[in-house]
Length: 416
Ligand code: BGC
Image (cartoon, rainbow, N blue to C red; front, side):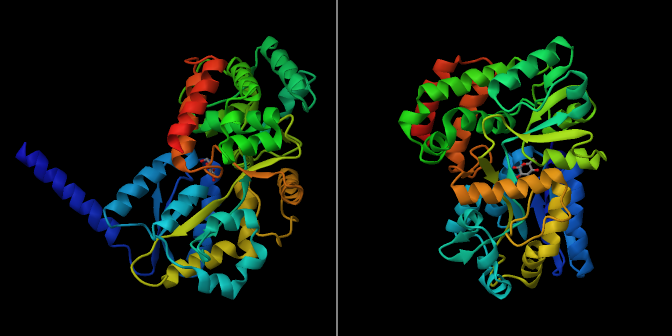
């Protein structure tokens, strides 16, 4: 027993030494970009930094949506060993910023004019008390559907623009023996689907009232019950093995023609591209029926953790590399997202990317741009997790729609 304890202690000491011994000129980056498409995009950033002589210590924590990464981050910060830079989303960034854990990037931001080119919707999550605390990498959005074109063509299905057309397409695929919807049963994926479904039923005002303003009346409304009813229809159109499946494996089902559609953020496009698939030829991207004008967004940012003093030269270099217009184009072309700056040309983007950039600008101009509930841009993590629990319990058949609505009202009022 003693020997076991001793060897465990040795391992812990070795791990701690290896993480604290990051060379002065290295950056240690904690992130959850572990799928094929995500890793390809991350390489664009690694290579950019390596070109500047800055080494990269990789700290990947698998788990789409980043929940597991945030758990590891909390342990590292509590242990007094925060990584140099950490992928973060929305309210999580604000939480760390308000706790005073993040370095001040104002010098590099001022020198490079970030205030003039980063959209307000992103600044709201990148600045705390007038201080830039993180560097926005991209803008993703969650209300997309991805389809296998050959499967749709073979079954005479046109891109559905209404819920009724969508359910008709699902019926056709089911009768043809094709899995209509590829899905991974993980809470964050259920919630990602719910983002789009709720937007399509409640409309932009209802979405904002429910998930951003946390209005009890809207959370408990007939519209919300209808959203849950539609989730049950989606549940009836996934395969038997959906439980626990990773999102990129669900994307692979659409890529290889096992399934017709996947409802997922545009990081899914990174998987299609990584498999050498071409938009418009091999796969189709379109907004979830009934949400053509709206964008529910999430922006990945790199929070720079305060290493005890001013922002380090490596952190400033990383932040500057991330915001450079050429990097914003090169990275987002591969990742599936769109640039976090308004002045980047769409020339290098494929048709889905071009549409994503247009949709984002139009939604921002018309007041139709909203933070994604599922990806931490609508409400703090406590509320997000409370919504996750209800959406997942309903998806798995534990609640009928009426019960889900009542549980949602209760869960949000306790969490907020
Ligand atoms: C992130 C994406 C990532 C996806 C799946 C989202 O929360 O914003 O960058 O690709 O999770 O891992």
